[in-house]
Image (tube, rainbow, N blue to C red):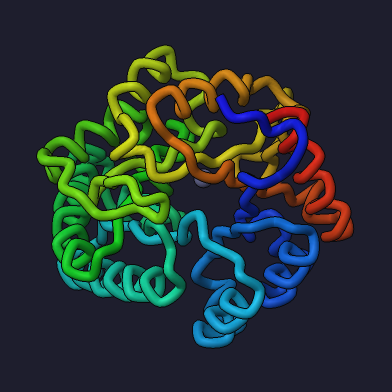
Length: 298
Ligand code: ZN
């Protein structure tokens, strides 16, 4: 297992972590100034600054991406909305390519309409079929462009409104159905990557009794991203009360050990949504704390 205690060489910042403080171009500059080598930006943050300007700032600072957030949201209330989702996912693939991302992260969606507060049905199996079909169609396009897709299983508390893929096992079952050959694309590290893989976010999967076995099953080819933060006790908000690494109950080094034993050698991406704590602090303090905790708690 890599030693993270003396530097932050493998730290990446998911830019949602300081989204309340700064626009994306400022985030890029603040990360670069601290010797942080990678970020994972969100599409709305990119759009707010402009794709070309973001690409230019990345080039100027030498920052890499550890992922691009995000595609997905495949289930729709009708055929037209499902088609619109596919078109939007193709645009997300194109943006990821422009920014030289190693993968596009997929948050697959839940019951259609639920995120807006008005689910149109209760058939989660149907939503999961939409997800299967949506990933299949997007994968076809992503293969042509050469952009790996990373399914991010979300904690079951988000099954209704954000993602009806809720365990690593379920995500890998989809990978095996849609990409049985683990067909290759070349990763930034020169190693082969599957066109379809997973993003392992410790916040979503830490509780899973099958986690170690499923990480081993994923292997290097399917492990496309590692997201870290912590699970606070008590958790006060389902979405925006994530903890800084070391402040909660997730044994992050143990999980990182499993991921690395399976062959993952990429960035640990800090992704913290925290309306009542970290989003209220000075952005520089947040980044400096991420660096310190990356050394002591990841
Ligand atoms: Zn994540």
